[in-house]
Amino acid sequence: MASTVTGEPSEDSPNLSRPGYGQLLRTRGAWTFLLPGFAARQPFAMLTLSIVLLVQHTTGSYGAAGAVAAVTGVSMALFAPFTGRLADRHGQRAVLLPGVLAHALSGVALTALALSGAPLWALFAAAVPTGASVPQIGPMVRARWAARLQGTPLMSTAAAFESVTDELTFVVGPLLATALCTTVDPAAGLLTEAGLTLVGGLLFAAQKKSQPPVSATLHARVEHASALRVPGVRVLIVAFLGIGAVFGGMQVSLAAFSESIGEPGLNGVLYGVFAAGNMIAGLVCGAVAWKSAPQHRLVVGYAALALTASGLWAAQSAPVLAGVGLLVGMSIAPALITGYTLVDGLVPAGARTEAFTWLTGAVALGQAAAVTVAGQLEDRFWDGAGFLVPMGGTLLALVTLLALRSRLTPRPRGRTVARGVGHRAPVAVD
Image (cartoon, rainbow, N blue to C red; front, side, top):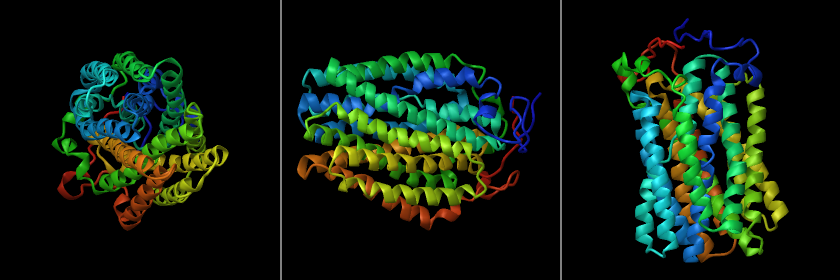
């Protein structure tokens, strides 16, 4: 029996009187997309670091490695919203099947070119399709949650759960990539990423029953409006660019720091500590019944992120760097979770996957820019100069967020705002 989007739970949703992880995971059909979704998103956490370690090994330059990784990230950021919109219109499976095949082939081609000593322009050329074809599993999983829980208190819990899942992959992914590249072969990380993407993506695409029904988003023309037309989404994009600056800046800078002290394998451990902080904070955020408005929580969480990221450059030892990185990770989770939670109130259902991919793409774009700048700083200046990138990126994003925070106020349910973007038509929830 379906229910319209009025804030009432459907039969798929458990009792929502006390929303929490237990209630969330009892949502009917959730595990059919959660398990393959986790497998499919794991390679994403390996991609940038695998490219950096491979290209740095073959060229001897962190600047070149960061540039190739940056091209991959920019390509993903530009194409992710496009694939998200295609998924909204035609279904996730139709986008995933060709996408994972293209990504696997592109990753193998990039690896072969790097190992053969190809010129930098050839690596850039291979990096473009590698990034453009990255499967947007995280946004697609979030869209599946939204289709089942739209308008319910469990949406915030689902956003927290997804943030924790993302960060779990960023605990495992860098460790796996570092281990493969440093103990097996410099190419092993990227080749493993390509293989896991292919297998995991196909498994996730096979879960057809849990994907958001395409018919529910095609009945009203307004549901086709681009998520980018929503002012609040544009503000969130800027905020998520700063979060990407933290990820990218730390990936390059931690790798350079570990090499400078003669312990390259320590890189994965330090990045894992940072990601673990994010995961722990995400678990806490999802377990709390928040009473403050999400837009207010976003400002507070982002201020904490900017403050902690500003201390990275001063860390001079591995234990201190691990401690500061842990605090940075714990500050990222509230900002990420609240930003994704705000999408449910800002964006109509037919543009939700696209909105999630804009945010994911913003993180990738910020990460790409940060990898490039941090790599240049590490090559040209002192060890640890790359840590200035997370500080600068988060401070600039925080200023923008403070100036435009009024645009993050969620739309009134069931009312139409300018240009039809804010209209929420009743949507059946299976």
